[in-house]
Amino acid sequence: MHSTQLALLALILGAAIGGLVSTIIFAALRARDRVDAQASLEIPDGVAEVLSGMDDAAVVVDTSSTILASSPPAAPFGLVVGTVLPSEELKSLARSARTGEVAATETMRLRRGAPPAEPRRVVVRATRISARLTFLVLRDITEKERVEQMRRDFVANTSHELKTPVGAVSLLSEAIESAADDPDQVRIFAARLTAEAARLASLTSRIMNLSRLQAADELSEERDVAVDEIVASAVEAHAIQADSAGVSVVRGGARGLWVRGDPQILSEAVGNLIANAVLYSPSGSSVGVGVKAVDDVVEIAVTDRGIGIAEGEQDRVFERFYRADQARSRRTGGTGLGLAIVKHAVQRHGGEVTLWSRPGRGSTFTIRLPLVEAPDAEPPRKKRKKSRATAAVTRPTPAAPAPVNGETA
Image (cartoon, rainbow, N blue to C red; front, side, top):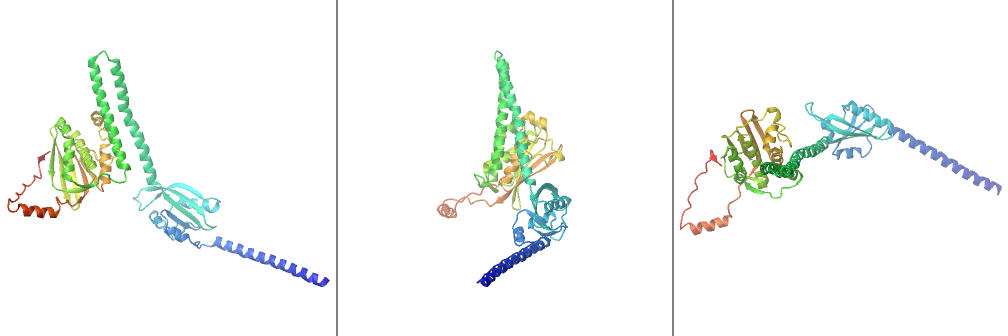
């Protein structure tokens, strides 16, 4: 009996010692695997697949800052497998993440493309994968910051522009109240008040139009529209302004061309160009509105013989609230939004607007829009029916050719 108990005790003790030894061996093997993984430069499973599907630039680098794997968007930044990180800031950030316990993040400027390309502002986040591998993700925030800056500028400029007419209305209303016993002064102040109110209404209307063009995803009234209709509507809307300024508007060029878009928006865009041309043209001169088709594009050019625009300012005339001639714009009530509206209206229609100008020789603004085929005047069946019914009665008289140049609108 005693020997049986000793044997059982020995068996239990041997099992315990064996389990302990197995545990120690297993722990040692796992520790060895961890050390090997930490010292290895092999990319962990799944990382390459993640990189291939990323929209942001991302790379895996080793301790020498050599790129071992990268996502497709990383190439434009010069982050190519087998090369070293091109920026000392990137190298320093990778080292910080590799030696630290948490991910490191930094905002920096990196060049994307060949040296002429402007540096981009990017946010870089570095995460430690192992003792020898670091994962870097680069997010380009250049456009985001540009849009945000534009928004801040727009709010600031709008507040500044609204302050002038609102202040003038307030002062004129006080002046009218104080001159209540002087009818002549009241009439003078009332006329100026009306002018400032009209300027305020024009400014708010243009701000709303510009906001609508920038915010809307789709054009609400898109259809095939005749360029003749667009030009005629724009010229008619500014006929009184042209007559008052002693400027004639001449329509020339091709007829019967069609584009796709919102006729009201396009008419307002051409009208803004005509209004500017009339505004900056001397009395007795003319403003030309020419239309032509070049390949698959319709060009609507508005030409004046005014003061022209200096070359250094031509890139800025399409900015919101920018005025090449500040004094003249203030005197005539210009808002500085007309050309910005033209630019966004044309871009919404898949086109572009360009400028040619020389000081003292005038300016030409050209709207370029995709050309579409002219729709049929009526269905073919109706045409055949009409021809059978009228063939025995009369023959249609051919229309006289429309003039292409020198027609005064």
